[in-house]
Length: 395
Image (cartoon, rainbow, N blue to C red; front, top):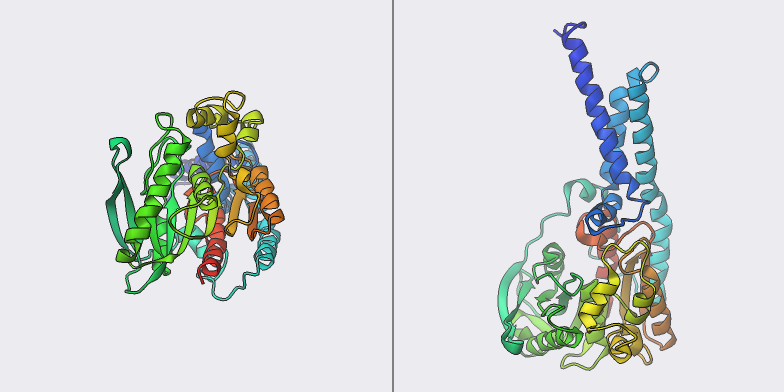
């Protein structure tokens, strides 16, 4: 039995300070739902804040519940309630905007004449998955398969296959990393999910800037496609049904590869927050600019747009939007301060003028690299619509 004058007081002190810790933590994370991250270190919170909003709601309610009885006579309790209430409102704002966002995305799919025949996920957002994670899926994974040695640099790819036998459409996954880092194991959960749903996923590698410039990186993507054209069938892949998919720098390379001639007929391309106009992005960098966009582009191209205007144009996907191109799905976060969403919107508008089938999805709460949290709000929504687009593109 707790002594109300000693043990009881100590117990309630622990509860109060636990509530304070919860309040500080949830408020700090929730503020990044509206505050743009000024540095690379803080970008992690800017990305994660909206994606863990469901957890922030639960934690805020717990914090309020722990001090509710002391609210009338404790300034500490009032601080906890105020902090948790702010966090609760900010986190709930994600879900308040979700219905209108989904209606807009559904219209975009209808404009592409994509019918909801059989989406591979039942709903755009599964609340259970926000807390417990997206269900573990089974896939046959083969890693480090060599496909090229440009300038003596060995490049390899990973293959994700369905567990069942058959002939399946191919998704070529190109990782991001500011053109300077990353490897084929990036977003393995996403690749496994697609494989379990009936795709053969080839997660490829490429050389990195600043040592290698943009045309070398693109040559490596082309080399992977040539290898897949020759060997894809050995892994159950249907080389007549190929879609390129990339994120950030990988989305940029995937679009360039899809919009230029290759040995494989590319049915479609999916770009998650990929750069589209390097010249304008250099001249008008985001504010704030946590990734230092100009430095990254100079490292990739080898100079500034004033020094190398032709190279910047050739390395920009929007340059090729002058004729019908493979169907394109563009997915961006409106709060992206690395690759601003306006560039995806401009490319979508330009592609539409050429008669290209294009879908543009913009999530109002999301930052760059939003799908790093695989079971987060934005990642689940993006996965749902990406699956529908892929199923339509390869049918």
